[in-house]
Length: 348
Image (cartoon, rainbow, N blue to C red; front, side, top):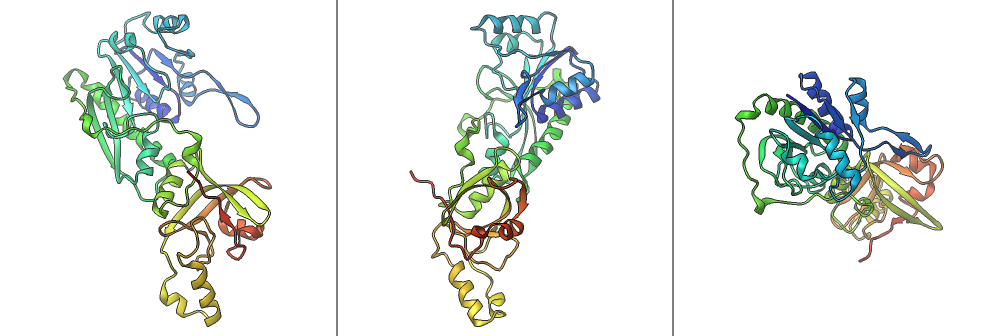
């Protein structure tokens, strides 16, 4: 089978590796051009380019495939120089023009990280976690000119663990997608695609900077889902206001806590300590305020409903390393539950 593969990030690299391991070696791999990244401003190749180069597969990195541009038309002509049975796409990052959708014998096939039609778009994994979905999966779909609107050839579902992050779920889905894709290719001529139910469609557009800003006026459960979804990627963040300090803090991990400490634990405290702890932990504190709690391994923040405990964070101060909440509290007094500090609220 003559295959052309298009993909860019680690998700796509796992799928490409699986294709090669199962005897489906593409004759050509398309991936995004090398990009300057990081503080060192070094030119970095995509994960897919790394896999293709390791296996000696030809790599093509066009800036565009748009048929409205000379460079795009030339790129498409290059891909179709020889016959193609199927054009496989996994998180490529460029729109696929009609000639690449229709010219291959079996058309173009997309490996999408959701159970379509739920979460069409560039960020299905993050949106599934932010929405609190309990299940997601992989869809192998026949591509058309719409955005993830084509008929579905096969799906595989998997539960979402309550503590799972966007990074870990993406990795799991990549391996599920690799296996499902190879299974589909082995019986491609037997498969029949089913149309998507448009009434069930939801959108998962590309993440933008505002997606990562925490709104403490939301319930703790929603904030927890936001932190999990973005951990290790754009990373959820908020600005802490304490005295004359104004510090951007990225939150990498945390958990939802009960609104108040358990009564039996409070009863074991001395009267003065118990009174102080109760006053500082009840929901009278405004959303975003750091409050007193019996969990000393966390920095506990009031939300509109429930408390959110920050476990791992990164301050835009000092070395800027990711550290446990207990270590950050010891190093920076304004993170203490006695400081009166509070996170900035989003208005509008």
